Structure formats: structure tokens, C-alpha cells
Length: 217
Ligand code: AMP
Image 1 (tube, rainbow, N blue to C red):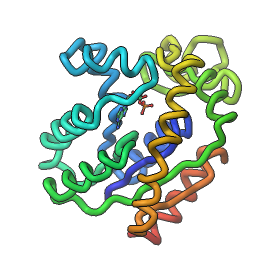
Image 2: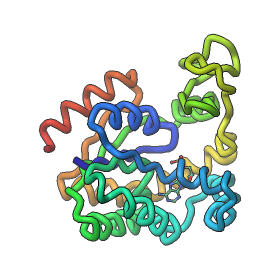
Image 3: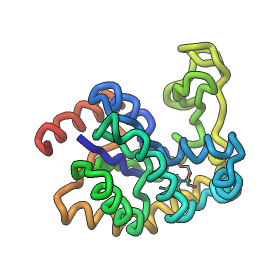
Image 4: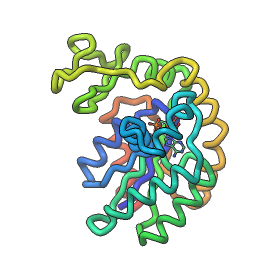
């Protein structure tokens, strides 16, 4: 099984990824996480991507696709089941993923599209806090930690993503609305698209994804 998680920033892709990876034993590939790791490690890719990400813009299709290819390659011998989180984001990336699916002989992915209104997305992103240690996600408005700034699970410090500021968020939403239409239309026309209401509780969304996948595969 291969899955693509598609949806605007803040639609719950990270939370659903954790649930899906655990349940279906998928290998999680998040281009956003990988780019943030590259920034922390100060690799040439990270140095090139840092300012772009902080402004809320997209890293070039070529750079992010090269990165994705180099992530799949060493994993492919052990698995043929991936969860692509945050890729593709443009129609060019959709075509690039087709090439990668062929190149690595992967099964055609089901594309899960999480729909959430812009108003909710802004609250989700401005309120988002992520544990620096275990990566658990909290939200100061919807699911606050018991003690402010401290992870309930491992007591690690909770941090805000640098791109979760109002300017960057509105730019990311603008770009999402600009780029997502052709991607969704293409996957819809191929019968690969599963669209769900991403505002429901995460366990409900997860159950609905499961039901839709059992029909898809
Ligand atoms: P995310 O964690 O998926 O919200 O991604 C954070 C940021 O990383 C985005 O706002 C982009 O700047 C960059 N990024 C992640 N995935 C991609 C992608 N597939 N194409 C271009 N830029 C990306």
C-alpha cells in the first residue's frame, strides 16, 4: 500500500501520519520534516531552503524531488509501502511522483485529501506546539498540554515552528489554494482521490480513512 496525504498546512497531516504509519506499517516520508532536519544539520539543501520555508514559500520542485528520491532509494529494499506526507504539492511534483512510482516499482498511491476551512487552519497553526523530544503535537486552543510549554508524554519542551507565524501562514495558505486545484483535479480524474472532512476528531478521520482504504485496495 502507498498513501499520499494531501491537504492544506495545518489540516492534520502530521497527526494522521502517526496513526496511519502505526496501523498500516508504512514508512513515513515527510518532505517538511526532512527539510527541517536539513536546516538543523546545515546541509547545502538546508541552507538553500531555510529562508524559503520561513517565508512560507515552496522549495523548488527539483530540489524537493531530488531529496525525495534520495530518501526512497535506501529504504526501497526493505519496504514497498510508503506514506508521502506533504508531497506532491504542485502539478509538476505530481508528475515527478509518477516517475518515482515507476522508477521504484511502487503500487499506485491512494491520495487522502483532508479538507479544513482557512479560519480553522489559522487557529490550528498559530496554536500548534510540538515536543522537541518526542514530536507529539499539542494545540494551545484545542488540545493544550496539562502544563504550559511541557509535553504531557515525555516532559520535553514544547516549541512553535518558525513558520507558524501569521505572515508565513497566510502565504502558505495562499500558495496552497493556488497550487492544489490542478493536483486534486488530476488525482480525482484518475480515481485516486479520497476526500474527507479534516475538522472531525482525529480518531474519526482516521477511521474514515481506514474505511475508504479498504474499498480502494
Ligand atoms: P510542511 O511541514 O509539510 O508544512 O512543510 C513546511 C515547509 O517545507 C513548506 O511550507 C515548504 O516551504 C516546504 N516544503 C515541504 N514539502 C514541500 C514540497 N513538497 N514542495 C515544496 N516545498 C515543500
